[in-house]
Image 1 (cartoon, one colour):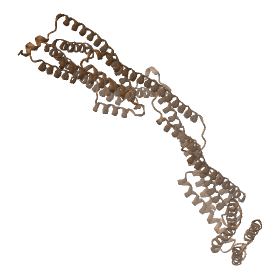
Image 2 (cartoon, one colour):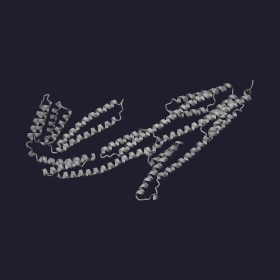
Image 3 (cartoon, one colour):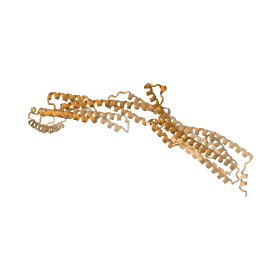
Length: 630
């Protein structure tokens, strides 16, 4: 029986076989060099693409919205959670924005200095304390980055030395005198150690890989392990590379092309770390993997092109928003209502802006600055308007207070005719003073009206004797109320309507009643006459107008008839404004509906608008009726 050493010696190939193996080895090395070079170029392209993508993602944070203090805090936070590579991109963006704001602030101060008569060459900007703090943070960042870089480079160099040692150990295996199974196990262990070691210096990577592949081929060519074990290893490598091909082909169907592209790079690294496969299948296997790679790369390129188109379209949409806001800024607004309506449009555009994705990187800063400047200009103009309005309202409040003082000075005057004319004139002037804030208007109105009421109550009491027999008038009105209640009419609504109008005329012809009974009897009359009108087969709108006329005629014999009628007008005008506002809001909402699922909601809003417009028409007719009484 021969020992292990004898077995190995019997397996040593002839000189011709050695030459053939050497030629094959050279071909393998040449192929690997070509593949390595190509793979390295692809890797560099991938790294560049990923770095650009990371840079784009970093720009998602709009640092222009932060103040200088917030930017300093952001930089400090970034340093506290330092991550090599990522933190540098973040610090670079913060730094660019920080000094952009500092320079803008200096330019603003310089412009003010020159406007005040200073010379540009004499201007010396003050150092912002935040800038000193920020510089200290940048210094800390550089120190941290230098330390981190040194550590990484040191680790890479250590990894390089470890891999060189492994190559030497694999190379030395060919001279081992141990049993080939032991040597083979040592070889597999060294391969696993190689895979577990991570990055090495970039400039040494290609040469290192060539040496490693050369050592692998040298091991297989000179160790001469038995054919069964060698075939097993080749088949095992074949199964691993087949699995990689299948994974790559599945990735080509993945909808998330970014993830697919990144995963593909991992597959390429795994492919490189797997040993040789049977020679007759090597080329076909590589072509299969290369085909899947090309397909994914093509899809990724198409994806990048699509992203570019989308970002260009987003830039167009954001430009349109800026143009719309510019147009709103060019408008002239003369009332709070107009300003609020314009504000709603601005806010809608701001909300729309937030739904639009990224734009090309080179336009990101400029389009945002344009958008922000346009919005800032609008709200500055609005603020200026309200400051002016507030000053105007102060004058209007002062005018109303002055009118109150004048009425209070006249409230106890007994020169009824002359003072009545004066107070009525003051009431007209009150209407002309214009609107003031609701928080002030109600209290001032109550004081003004109370002073008027004092005068007219005194006047009414003074003229009681010339009003006739008030008790007799009370009885007449009660009898008329009973007559109205008992009135029965046939189907001739027109004839009944004339009769009810006759009741109204008779009521108005009856004189004054005792003041303590006035409100009660008036309410009884209103209820009775309205019930009769309800029975008439006439249009609802006409009924509403008749009811209003009854109410207005009830005010005619009161001491402050005009004020009560004006109060009624104010209520209806307020309702009209609410209805108009609702119609406008609903019409705006309709603009956002599309066909299909929104049809039901669209019809609902159209019905609301139709009903509201009818209601608006009735309210306008009521205002017209009130104005005729005034």
